[in-house]
Each structure stands twice: as C-alpha cells, then as structure tokens.
Image 1 (cartoon, one colour):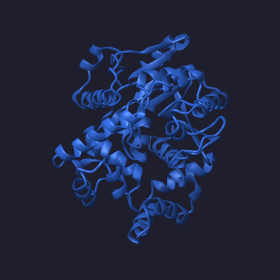
Image 2 (cartoon, one colour):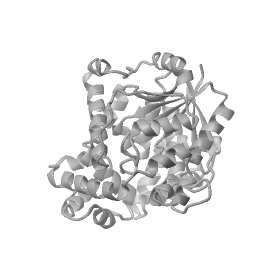
Image 3 (spheres, rainbow, N blue to C red):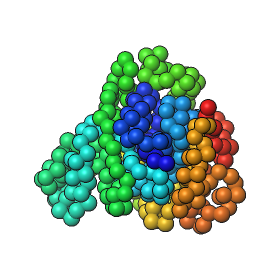
Image 4 (cartoon, rainbow, N blue to C red):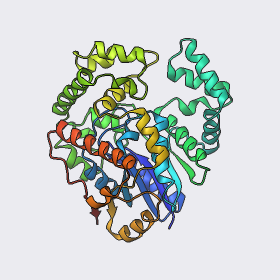
Length: 387
C-alpha cells in the first residue's frame, strides 16, 4: 500500500484542509492519506481549541484515512524541530512514499533547492552576518537565502518556512519520501480576515463565535466549535503560563530559543499578564509566536535537549482516528514500522525509558489543555473508528 503523509495541526479542521487532502489523494495516486497531527498544543504555543481525538475524527470525516499523534516535544518547537520530529516518524513507516503540504509557492524544485541551501555552511554564515548587522531573524533568513541563490519568497511566510524545513528533513533522511507541495487557496497562515469559504485557521479562531466563521468549516466542525469558550480558556492558560515562570527555577534557559538575555527579561515580567509579557518581549530578534512558544514549552516542561534526543532515538506511533473501511490495511502498515505502536496501556509499559519520557510529556500536555478548557481529559487509549 502507498501512503501519502500530511503534517498538520487542524486547529480547527477547515475547508482549506479538506481541499489539501482531496488534492493530495488525486495528485499522489496513493491508496491512503495519513495525517500526523499535533495533540494539544500548537507550534505557536497555544492550546488547541478542540481536543485531539475530536480533531482527528474531523480529519477522517474530511477525507483522511488515519490520524496519528505528533509528540508535544516536537509540536511546541521551532519549525526545523517540528518538521524533523514529524518526518522522523513518517519515515519509519515503510508504506509512506510522499509528503504533501500546502504553501504559497508550490514549486517543488525551488523548495528542494532552498532546502539544500539551508542545510549548508554558506547559508548559516550569511544568516549570522545578517543577524549581527541588526536585522530581524525573519529578514535575516530571507536575505541569507537570497544571497545564496535561493528563492527568498519561499520563506517569507510560516507555511513556506515549514515547506522548506519539511524538504530539509526529507533530504537529511536520504530523500526516500517524495515531497508534494500544493498551492494554498484562501487566507494566509496569519491572515485573520474572514473570507466566504477558505479562511485561515487563525481567522476562524479569531472570529470563533461568529456565524460567518463557521461557514469556513464543515458542518461537523461548526457544531463542535459552537460549544467552545475560548475567553475562559485564555484566562486559565494565562495563569498556568505565569505560574510556570514564577516556579520554574532555572529550566527556562533549556527551552528552544530562550537565550540568557531573553530568559532574564521573561523572569522580570513574570507578574504581568501573558499578553503584556509577549508584547514587551517581542522585538526584531524575537517574534510574538516565538515568545508564546517559549512560554508554552516552559509550562509543559518541554526542553530542547529532550526533543533532540527523541528524534535521534525514535519515539512511537500513537493512532488517534482511522477510517473503518481502511482499518485493517492501515494498522498492518503501521505495524511494519520500527517504532512501537501504542493502542493500549500495555503498549506504553513496553516503551524504553526515552520513548516513555516523551510519551509522558504528551500526557501532561493533554491534561493541561483539558484543565485550561475545564473539560475532562479523554481516555488516552482511544482510537476513533470513523465510518
């Protein structure tokens, strides 16, 4: 069986995601689409608006054949770690032959060229020089890629950055998985403007209580979103993040992207509301998304050295939802992986110490998200069987 992989957040699942799955199936010619999805916290450091099993079910209802979990250690991390962690799991499944993703500039050759440049010493040297000259990280990265002969437009958006990082991760593992870039339609990643049909997840979350936002998601997602209280969850998460700053000792410096100067500034603002902390720390070198991610990783005890170790060592495959008609074929394919498959409590007992530590960090993130939204945490060994 040939499987097309998709790395995703689905926060929430919307019409653009459905379009990507449909295009991936049509273009790849694969027998199944396997999504590897963040569980409870996103790459920009926010709690997912809906719980993981429900979002996984939505993905299968929207066209995917199976959804597996991306560990929290990779989910709440910079783009290169987010990509490397996801690709490391997909690469361990022999039947995964391609990786589809949406981006604004869906030129495969340009993306592969940029990936090779980003993996080289010349790019790193130019990036350091641009940063030393006082440019923001985003502008420095764009300029460095351009000066090394790459298409700078590719990394001018978050989706473009991830696209190139996916390609970097695939190439670093021998290029056995083909990449399948698909041009995005509708609103951009950070565009909070609502459109008639294909708004971004950012826009849908920003207008989550408005009827016009719900037109951008399938009906089964709209019904779930109508019951979400994001205002209350925001207040509860603010308390968790600030408490972690106050009580975290010296571990903040071990979080991805938290240099000593930034660490001290964050600690100095620990008694302020989170949004004020983020505003005060956002600067040329530090985007607001990076600050949010640092606060989340600190609260969830997700540290850089651990994530790197998990990638090197290997983790596990944790299915969340599967299409009923494909269940036997999908599980047969997942069972061929060198990574352990987690579908029961006994499977977790068989994990070695490193994989078990990674798994426990997932459980903590799930429990924190459930507490933030004041909802019960679902039974962990559920696999949604979707008709």
